Image 1 (cartoon, helix red, strand yellow):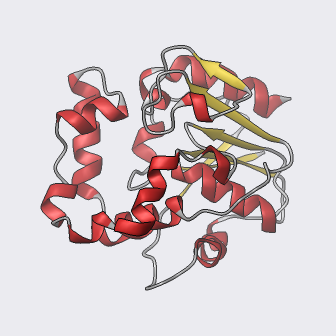
Image 2 (cartoon, one colour):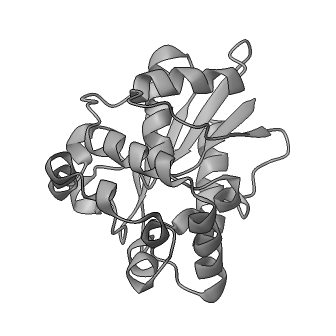
Length: 215
């Protein structure tokens, strides 16, 4: 069984590096590719398909924005399982205040340097708890393509998915500040888990993934 991991917005496979799964799983990471101007999330997702071998059984694991992409991929492929972490399964779970961006489009006027410079607020909202986690978040933000970041945020706030994907399993933390659990109905809650819990609660997440993917 091949497991394709899809990272969060602006992140990459580094956020998954502490996860540990049984050796009989083949782990592959879907890499973000540059978006084209005015590209829809559906069209972008179709272009990611070149990284997935659909001729043999596979499952998808999506983190945050990657969970939305995994949901869209599930509409055009037939994965054995779809597991999302620190994400949303339908557009109804996106906090209402995210939709303010639809009107203001405030990211467009922010300078790239500001978007690529972590600060106390970002550390707090992502739930990074020590210097190791802050350093990783700093590296990720530094490596983030600002054009892709702004595009992806616009896709998040305008996502229009009304139905949970068939067989989708949702793992969510009770302390997630980006997608607060009060808007979410996950299949399993991670007590005290923030948006960065795939890293700082890797042992718990690994155990759940192994059990679900083996089922």
